[in-house]
Image (cartoon, rainbow, N blue to C red; front, side, top):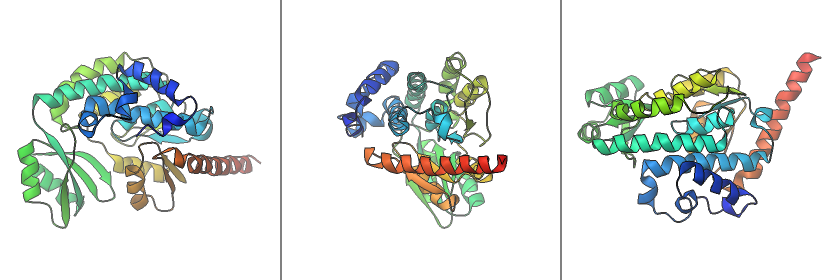
Amino acid sequence: MLAPWLELPGVAEQLAALSAAADSDLVAHGTTSDADTIRDTAVAQPLIVASSLLALRVILDGRAASDVVDVTAGHSVGEISAAAVAGVLDDAGAVGLVARRAQAMARAAAAAPSGMSAVVGGDPAEVLAAIEAAGLWPANVNGAGQTVAGGALDGLGRLAQHPPTRARVIPLQVAGAFHTPFMDAAREEFAPVAAAWPANDPQLTFLADADGAPHGDAATTLATIAAQVTAPVRWDLVMDELAARGVTALLELAPGGVLTGLAKRALKGVELVAVKSPADVEAARDLIERHSLAAAGATEGAAQ
């Protein structure tokens, strides 16, 4: 996952600093740890955020995100990466904060067996009704025909046995039922940590994944990040807001692919680049240059 990035100048030093912030060997976890090790949410969350931010800094090559990015958002743990893109957190602060989130969620997941399953297809109202009937919660409402149910394992079994019409139920390899009441203990542990974390007001528009709305100050952003430990991720509303703002291009940071897949179906006409490895850096830079320059040109034209 991180081996090809570590071949680039300066990345090893950046990752060492992020490892120190997380109090975790992200170099080992991103290069040699096995799947069972990184499936542990206490490992996976800092690794995901570190990967996103390493890719961001390589792509920007010293430029400030606020110089080229109009709006940012992140799905679940990615919301902390998005907060760093927006300047709410510095990179080490983001990885340190997500490590505390991950540890709290890992403890909550270990307290009671739980899990998550994706429900793909089906009528949205029927899908939500089937999730409720199985005693579960809609943990992620992702749009583009995808909802993720979370809750007790027996409830997930009932949903799999009685799926909604024209829908598939796909078990997910996760440690617990995130964004559901199973994480209440994690939210209670993490909220005061987040509230006291060093932060700045956003330097560009930051959309919360709880409701797709922008948040304009540090305290509200940190409160939102803490609350979404148990709140459903409403990525459908985020994409609606991106469309309403006339976004012309979407860049998904490493480990990319899932969100651009959703956007391909829900944000027609928006140019997409998913960053999966350093091989995607030039495409990402090209996307930024063309769309940032187009936006700048439109602004200049309006001013004239």
